[in-house]
Length: 305
Image 1: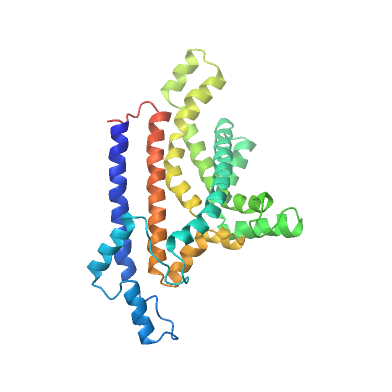
Image 2 (image 1 turned 180 degrees about the vertical axis):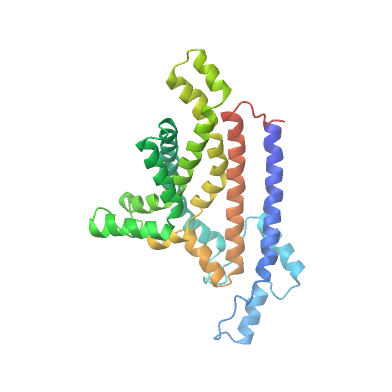
């Protein structure tokens, strides 16, 4: 296992390096530049370009970027005055991560339960209800779901606050809105996987040995059926925890999603690079954890080889 983890870490570092390189050169190909403000005099613009190293050859800029990246320094934002990219990430990430964790707990727990119930009661009203939830969750956009929750639970019935992030009550609606799509996806995958596992020979063998129905479901069916769910958790966890622009905008949450979109709109090269690489590192770590979980959940997978 240790050897496998080391290999995966090396592959992860190469992945992050490739991502950083590709994004660096793609950003330089974007139309326009960060200093398009007409109020800037040519001298001020030249000073800014010198400060950010734009007056150097592209290769020199790239090597300087890699040097700063090794030290975990993403530089200063070109749009937000006197703010480093690291500070912006640290300001927004706690809100996005807190909201994401709440959403993931709701989505994974209820999604797995709905998937199991749908498979165990195939063709019944319970199965029909779970399938409808999965279809609605994967079909309704985030902005529609967020507006729906705000209108009914916040404005019409007055049960919960509709905007802000000042306490537990403020987190319920955005967490539900963010969790709905993932919940529907998990339940759909879990249902299909459970139905596939039921037909396997080892389930028939377990029944022939006289094992209880509960033990067969928990030890054999769920344990094997949950593997496809683990597969989707890597990118899902990374995307949910690092912020979503739609939900954060609707509920006025100061997370990373707003900064990410604004960085592209404002041609903020430093912020685009920093947040993209931060997301890439997060995604690589999540996928590594999922790969390790494979070996713990399913002994047939020998990750050490």
